[in-house]
Length: 305
Length: 305
Image (cartoon, rainbow over the protein chains, first blue to last red):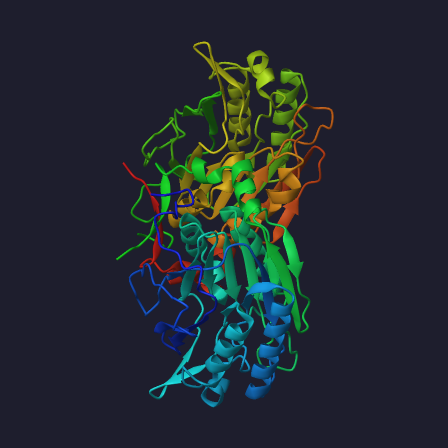
C-alpha cells in the first residue's frame, strides 16, 4: 500500500482546465447520489481517472486542478429568496476572484434555506438556473468553483447533498484537492485515503449546528489536518438565528500543522488563505509519519473496482 | 471488517486479574521491542489472546481488564535519582489507589531523566528494581498499573520505549483499554484498530516537548477521542525546565465527545477521571459513525497473523 504521496509524473494532467462546477446529489431521505460536472467543456477538460465502487451512488473522483493558489470560502448569508442567494453568491465569487482566489468554495445548501421542508420549493433541475449561473461566473473569473450543494429535482424525486456519502478528489500537476460534504469530515478514513492519494488540501462545504459546531467543527478540521498533514478548509453558510436550522458559521482554513490560518465569525464574509505547498512538504519532512506508519500492523485501504 | 464494537460474550474473561505491570522495550536506536508482563501470576491470570505479526518486535496484545473504574495519571516530577523517582512514584500510586483509582498510569521514562545519554546509567534488568517495586505496589493496592516506560539493559544492549512502535490492548468483560506510547498517538490507524476491537479507553504515556506539546498534545488526544468515540488519556512527566529534554506536562483525560475532562498543569500531580462506559455507548448512538462508515469505499484493516 502506498503511504507516501504518489508520483504523479506518469499521470496525465490538464493545466488548461480552468474551471468547473461540481454538484453532488443524494436521494432524500434515502441515499443515492450521483456526480454532475458542469461548465464549458469545449476546451476545459474534465477527466475522471478513477472511480471507486459505487454504493448508494457515491463516487471518488480525480480531476486536474491548479498548482499553487489562493483559496476563498464564501460564507454566504442564505435568505429565503433563491434569486437573491444566487446573485449575492456570484457577486462574492467575483469579489474573491478579484482578490486573487483561484479556487472558491460555496457553502452547503447555498441557494435555499437548510431543511427538507424547503427542498420541494427550492429544488431545480440540473443543469438549471443555479448551475448555469455558477458555470458562467466560474468561466468569467477563470476560477475553480466548488459549488457547495443545492436541492435538486429530477424525475419527480428530490435530492440533496447528503452527509457522509459523497466525496471527490480534484487532481492536478502540483496540487490535489479532496472534497467532502459536511458530515463526511467525521470519517477519518476518507481523509486518510485522500492523503494516501497525494491530496494536500481537503475542502468540506458544510453546515454544522449550534451543538456540533462548538463541540467538533474546528476540532475535526484540525484533527484531519494534523493527522494527514494537509490543509483543511470548510465553507459554512452564515448564521441566521431565525432559521429553522441555525448554521454554526465559522468557515475556516487550517494549516497542515493544525493551526487555524483564517476563520470567519458567524456573519456573511469571505475567508481567504494562501495555500503553500512547500509547507506541506516541510511538515511531512519534519514529522515523517507517512514513512513511519506501521503498515505491517494496520493500513487504511481504499476499495477499488 | 468489523466496524461496531465486537461482541465479547464468547471470549473468556478473567475478573480475578487484579493487577499487572506492563513494560515495553525497544532497541535503541534501532527499533526492536518485546513485551514483558510482570506481577503475581500465581492467581492473577494474564492472557494473550491475539498477537499481531511482529516486525521490529512490536505486538498488539489483549488481556482481561476491569469493568467500570476510576482512572489516575501520575504526572511524576522525574529527578536524577532513580531510587527517589521509584519511591515517589510508588507513593503517588498508593495515593491514587486510596482515592479509588483502579487503573493507574505512570508516565514515559518515569525513573530516569529523558534522553539517550542517561540510559546507560539508569538502565536495569527486567525483572529488576523498578519492575519489582511496581509489581509490589500494584499488588498491594489491587490496581492495574500501566508502568509507563524505563530504560532497560539486556545482554549488553540498551532499550527504551521507542515512539511509534509499541502498542497493547487490555481487554475485559466490560471495558477494553488500548495502550500506546507517546508518538504512537500521531498514528490514527492504531486508535482506529483499537476502536474496531471494542476499546473504550486509550492510554498514552508520553513526553511531548515544548514545540509539539502546545501544537499537538491536546489536539491529538481530542482528535483520537472524537474520531473513535473513546476516552483518551495521556500521562506525561512533570516539567523540569533545567532538564535537557523539557517535557510538556499537561497529562489529560478526554471524553468520547472530545471534551477535556481533567488536565494537569506542568507540576507534579495526579489527574483523576471516572470512566463512564455508558457515555461511550450514548455518544456512539447519538452520532453513529461506526455503523455509517463506508466500508465499500475504505477500511482500516489490522494485519493479523
